[in-house]
Every structure is written in structure tokens, then in C-alpha cells.
Length: 442
Image (cartoon, rainbow, N blue to C red; front, top):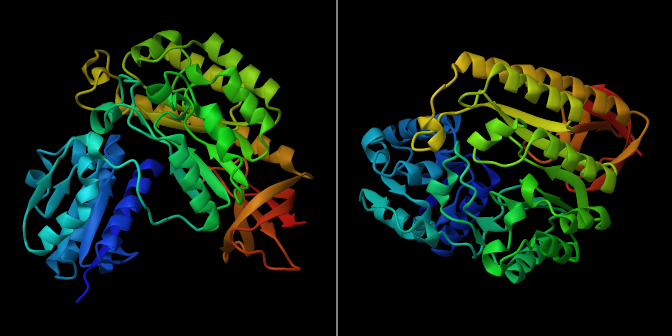
């Protein structure tokens, strides 16, 4: 009888792409894929190990599925992904419910691991992390009309608070020809929105060519027929070149949306974070972006309560956020990650102070969002339709200003016809609905 496998992927979109490639390997090996891991013979939890809350979510998922294994509904549990790689020596000891723990370098061998656990073997497999496949088939797990394109693996930035270089290894760019071919295949399958991702997209190409090549890659991707929106995430400020700005300004398919994870603005805090820049330099960059790319939507993330952050430095951050008025913003209390330089720093800040500071920033961001949505009233915007909300009794989707999973929605009514998911339509905004724009189909 054909055995079935299901994967639940936690954390970032980069992890999701890894899971999609594992799904392809499993199908090629003859396994039946089940969308619900709880109904499969073998459940794979593709874990996240970035910050404490993500690790706890991974543990909770493992324990939840372990109950089904105990009841005999699941035959085996496998942990893959960042948490499995990071805590390789502890996973089976702390979570004996698992049958296998596989580091990221073992993703390409996942079918053999499944075969072994079905034979009642306990497996611990941790090949060199550089063996994580960059190329290969994948089974798209997002809705058919949008997909992620992972252009590089790993990171060389070594921010003092971040464990990603330890987990994922050094930066490895994919060949541009392979990326274009993958984009063409996704477009042929119906993808309208392509979302370009890496730990640091702006560093793309440095390891291959000795210089930044993201601008060149984006121009090539914009020529792919069938794609209508191309969105770029995780652009680091020091690598946003004039050439890259020109591409954003000139290419119609490239949505005027840039995710720049700044983390802070105070020069001393940034230095302790292992990052460069200052409030003056960041302000100048944002001014340049808004002047040269009219209508650009800027998303950023901040960390509050980094070790040694004074009340004055936090106030400067709050003033900076208020002054800039980022259209999209996320804020996270600092998470103390073992084995990182920041974890060894003195002047660690109490959790309640970190959380309170984050809440202050997000409360102000709510006002920024309200103001942004108010300005949309009586304008027409493009919306990628995603579905129908029965409770609100209207359709919903995302605008060019909204990335999947992290930003909001646009809700709209349509009396004359029923727009289909994946369709890009024009919506006239006339109000707001629970902090999201509300409109009607044009």
C-alpha cells in the first residue's frame, strides 16, 4: 500500500521553499502527499529556530502531532529545518517522540529518511549544511497565483543578535539562468505575483561575481511573460545602490514596495548589533527612495530592548519611526539567542521593558496605517483577488502595497460579477474596515 507523507512548514518563506523541494523529492520517490500531516503515515515538521517564540511554536507542533502518533494515527514523526539543524544534539533527547531529526544539509535525502523511519529506525542525519539543495523541482504550496523565488541561501552579515549564519552557513547565490527558468515555469503554472526572497536579497551575486547583481536579475525577471507583479523582500540599506533604485523606478512589473529591515536608527545601537549606518544616513536613504520612486511603500522591522538600549536611544527610535512614517512596519522585542554575541553582552533588558517599548512603536504605527488608508479613499487601486469573506460578506485580496502573510488586505464588494482568486482587478476605495481599505469593484 502506498505510504503517505505530509509536511507542515513553520517560520519564513525561505523555509517554505525548502519544504516545497522536499515534497517534490518525496513524490518522485513514490510517496503519496497529504496536505494535512495529521492524516499522513509520516508527518514532517519543518521547524523554525530563529527566535524563542518560533522555537516554541515548533515544539508545540511536534507535541501536538505526537499525540496522534501515540493514538496510532501517525506512524512516524520527522523534524527538519532550522531548529533541527541548530539543536541537533538535543532534539531526540528532549523530544523522544521524534523518530528522526534531519539537518538542512539532509533535505535532499528526505525520501530515504522516510523509508528508514517506516522501518522503525531512529535517524539523526546532519550532513554539511552546504549540501542543502539550491536547485531542483518543487511542489508549490502557496495559492497558485503567487510563489516565492529563493535567490540565495545563507548569510554573511553576522548581526550580533542573529543565529542564521550559524544555522544556514555562508551566503550562496543561485545562478541567474536557473532563477529565470524557474520563474518561467512558475508563470506557466499560473503565478501572477513572484516574491523574490533571500536572507539578504541585496547581496545577491557578490559571491559569484564580486559585485551586487540584484538589479540585473530583476531586469531579467521582469521580461518573463505571464508575471504581472514582482515583489522584493529583505533589502539591506547599505546595499541599496543607485542602479537598484533605477530598476525599481523604471520596471512596471516591479511593485513599488521595498522591505528594508533596519532594526534600529541609533548609531551606537546599530554598531552593537553588528550593523552600520546612523539615523542621518537612513533618513537620507529613505528620502532618496521616495524622491526617485514616487509612491513607494516602505516596510521595515525594528528590535526594541537590544542589550544596553537606553531610554534615550529608544526615544530616538520612536521619533525616527514617527518622522519617517513607514507605510508598513513590524516591531519585535529583542530575543536573547544563545551562542550569539548579543547574548553575552552586559546590560540585558527586562522582558517587560522590551515588550512595552515594542507596544509603544506599534501603537503609533496604527495611526500611520489609519492615515495611509484614509488617503486611499476616492482612489482606484489594483487588487490581486484572494477570496470571499463570508463574515464581512465581501471579497478580499492584496494590493501592490501588501505582501502575503505580513501585511493587510483590501476588502471590496462586487454586485455585478464574482471575481475569481488570482484575478487582478481595479477597486475604488470608499471607506475602511477594521483598519483595512474597503471599496467596490470598478
